[in-house]
Amino acid sequence: MRRLDARERAVLVATYEHKVLLTQHLKAMFFGSLRRAQDRLRHLATLGLIETWYPPQPRGMGKAPGHHTLTESGAQVVASLLGIARSELLYVVKDDEDRGQDSYLAHRIGVNEFFCGLIEAGSVTDGHGLARWVPERTVRTADGWIRPDGYGIFLHPVGTLDFYLEYDRGTETTRQLANKLAGCIGVARDWTEPGAEHFPCVLIVVPNHRREHVVVAAFAAAIARFKRADSFAGLPFYVANEEMLSQLGVLGRVWAPLPELDRRLSITELPAKEGLDYDLSDCIGRCFTEDGSARLMPLACRPHFPVGKPPSAEEEPPDEGVVA
Image (cartoon, rainbow, N blue to C red; front, side, top):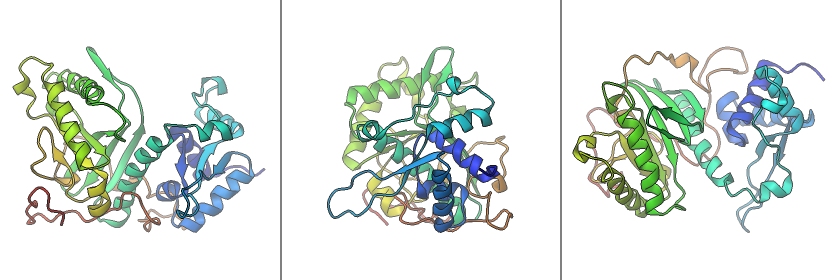
């Protein structure tokens, strides 16, 4: 077996970090074309380092996209790349039966689709790029902890946005949502000495507009648990629904500031940070091109969250309920 090149090693580590990735996801992250991604992934599967599988689809939906996970051999390679023992690598290799019963699969795919939508936005929109994508991790402060579905840093011409993603599939009750949001509020309150304005934005993606109203109610219930609730009025919590995201894209005006749903903002209009030192040339999706140079990559096929168009500076936000 020939030595793995840098891109193949990066693919294996990414598959470990994000547990399961579609062909389109890995294409956006590492390849200049879908065909090239398919060829390389087929090679890794032939080496026995990844396994590609296709979940059953409802009749008439066609074949599902390839889902890629590490094999035991792949996990051993990743452990070696990370300089740790296989027993220290928190990765469970699932068999066919386990994958078929993975109730968390749709959630994982949804989270990965959103982040890869931002990667694609950087590939086709000047001045934009996803500089960092950290999968689910526990974030702790002195007085609390949260476990967001991901953390990202997105660069755009106006500034740098750092954010936590909460991907909600509509399965939790209002009370459960309130408990989760209260945890975020508590961590935001204790984030730094200057206050919660330094806390990353919290972006909540829900299935539809109806679910957004559930999030509004849960947010109000969460705020009510704290003394001096009025002091939390400026917390950077935003909600968007997948119906609008699929129409306007990840760069469209889809984010409603909580606790209201009276206006929508683009991701480029959310609070930007200063002092986050990242460069567009280092953004995800700008490395490992076929000619070895750093260049933008073409859009992958049929994205779940399309890119959309960022609003111009002169463009006024539409009234709530109007989809431009």
